[in-house]
Amino acid sequence: MTSMEVKEVVDHPIKLRVMRLGKPAMVNSKVVTCDSKDLPGNALNAHLKKEVTTLANAETLAAGSFLMVPNVLENLYLGETFLCYIYLKNESSQTIHDIILKAEIDTATSHIPILGPKAFPKLDPYASIDVIVKHEVKEHGSVNKLICQVEYDRKHSFETIFSYRVPKPLDLKTKFYNTVTDEVYLEVQVQNIMSTPITLEKFILEPSVGYDVNLMNHLLTSSENKSVFGDFDILDVKETRQYMYRLSLDQTSEKNPPRTNNLGKLDILWRSNMGTKGQIQSSPLVRQIPELDDITFSITYLPDMVFCEEQFDFTCSIKNNRNRDMQLVVEVSDEEDSNLAWTMISGIHLRLLPPYSTIKTVFSMVALNHGLQVISGIKLKELILNRTYTYNNFGHVFVTQNHS
Image (cartoon, rainbow, N blue to C red; front, top):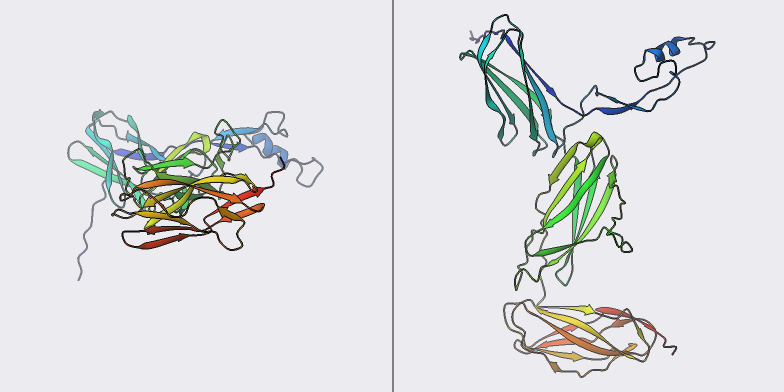
């Protein structure tokens, strides 16, 4: 025979009620009417006269939008503020003394006190106490619990639990594009997965230490740095948008900024219906650092257009990516069937290149034919380890006919 523990149900004189506070919603009056000789008769017109959203003696006119308390509260999303109203009432004819009220949020990982313990000396018969508490939601995906505890007369107590879910407001996807100059292009795709449209007030990338960020979401023709998304950055339900950022090493922070896989965080601020504010910060944006070659060779300056049979110069950057000195010799050679010819001496010795340092070198060529031409034919010989690095098809230049 099994034993069963029976708990006595206590009818407490104090009643606890909790109501979540929400913003009103905009509604429009629905005007549905018909002629009195039609089949419904005056049923539809009689119903319109009872509607609170219609105008008296002008029920068939749509009077615009009205504010209405929603019948069902909207979802509480990550980054928004949980606002609730706690109501205590003494429903007995006796005065209750030494009331203590406590409230906490119980999540999957933590217990967060949001109220108290708050003490009240007494509560007269049929009197009430009301308290408003708020909490910024910072966890999603699990069932959060609001636990309210009440103690009174130093010997009685009870608690009430209210559960609610916290879904994600936005769906973020990122892609990284690495370049030979150690710049990183970050593409961010954001989708509104909430039930209402929102206005994005802030969508910025906070870079890690040692990186500079350049926004690529503004019109080039605008002197006021105007966004490509317009003055009001509205994101509709299920709408997807893309943002682009360019990150480069901050050469002023230190002599040799370290290469890191942590590029920073996204800071997002939005407002939904009736100005409800929400803010989230993404987890660190981590990329896979590509393996660098011994030398990074890139063009830093190249004319947009050159004239046929006239010499032009361009500048290249040579960076030592190894923890050792390099002694480099620059050799140039004309490629077969090339419409560009070198006009500089081959075999130039560069100064000793220390570890992780950069040197800039000017190259000279002449165009032999017009059109879009490919730059090729550079070799860097490293004398210490006797290695050769060849660079072909590393640039293009447009050649036009000189009509002067």
